[in-house]
Image 1 (cartoon, helix red, strand yellow):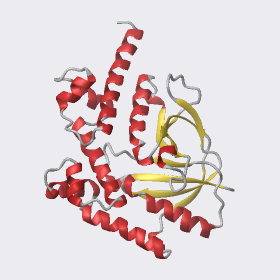
Image 2 (cartoon, rainbow, N blue to C red):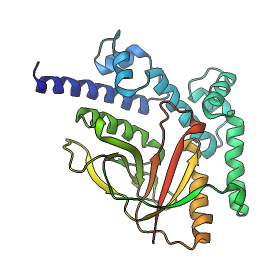
Image 3 (cartoon, rainbow, N blue to C red):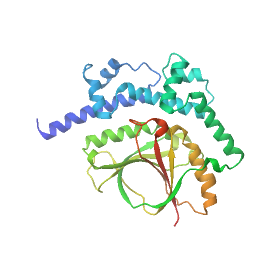
Image 4 (cartoon, helix red, strand yellow):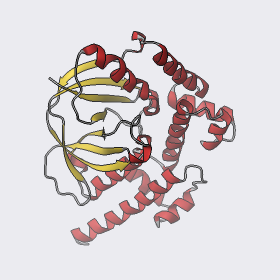
Length: 287
């Protein structure tokens, strides 16, 4: 087999895994059994799940469980949907089983997770509370080359674009050049309709000008940033943003530059519990 044939074969495999990922994202309420997904991937029912794990770093069951629980976490803090309905939507036949799984992943049972989210909203709406303060550093960040894909729509759905990004990096054999993962968020979701929100799923790379068939080149950084370190689930990150813009920025005397916020992921939900996820929210500020 020539190098070109090998590359074409690998690309076909990545495309098939990409179809499965997209199907999972858009059918979280469906019965996502392995045989159906294998047929969708047009891969051997016996071997395909091993291929999926080798490409993505997690099993299909882990992907489905993680995404359903992430959606449940978002529903808990953004809706008044009953717990029983959220549990059913997440694929659990009993609320008790859902509570155990959610607590294992997120460090607290769903009712407490929801109560904490509502409590934060109430305190923020009535008064500033220094107990909510997050660690902030002022840093000068160098200009760094990056590659990425545009994501249109709800920010909490950017995970599907990151999955496409990682497959594209593998297809272009660029994974060894990756030096970090981040999101770039252009619009304020309080001001822009959800369907018009713009963001980018990106990776830092070790050099500019890398050859790629489908990824966009970016340069990010350069200048001074206020860096807030957030620990916890992505679905519960909004209070950190509210504190950064509503409390810290006005009190600091700093001025935000007209550039997108960066979210630098210091670890990954593939091998980190949601409660232990670390994210640096980088706000560009004037010197």
